[in-house]
Image (cartoon, rainbow, N blue to C red; front, side, top):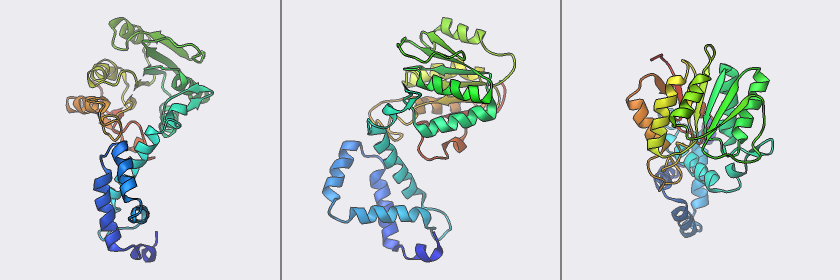
Length: 277
């Protein structure tokens, strides 16, 4: 936005938008809906318009209004996540994938960069994401997928690069099966998308993070639950497990560059290995 356009945005509009950012930051969907009904005829549409305009405007110190941007992103995140017609209807080649497409795009960028020899996926569901990963591996010309789940579902994609493993991701026999497939050369990528309770994710991190090669990733999915910013009543989940893991482990760092599209179901969940054991 040009300086002349930015100058026309009233200061009080930006101030009120910041106040709205605080209001928008945490309310559950039902409270937000009630809030909209109360405020609908009191100029809220105009304030929201100004808050979007302020994203392109520059504050006096030359920095964008990060509070307003964060509030808008979080509110869209809630809208997108709570709509049953979005990610729950996301399919790869006709198979349910249950992912945010923006995250899938990041996955293909990672696969193109790393050309992993092995991808370990904890949590298969219907197999759409495994099928997606296998398709990208076909395009880059390398890679195998071992995908683990406690249930066997009909209709999962059949692909020569995919191996389905039945059992808990933390079961010693399953872990031994995966370890036996670790390559002697090439990158190893891990994706955690099974039981999202914090204790289970912490156990998965303790088991599978050491398998990740330097420069590659362990991706902890659905760190957005437990009010980060969706499902506020979920309880400690992947985000809390990531925080505990990083506190005790300096071999991994959060790669915030993988959140470049703003909307991600895995905030702070792209953990890149920066050093060996």
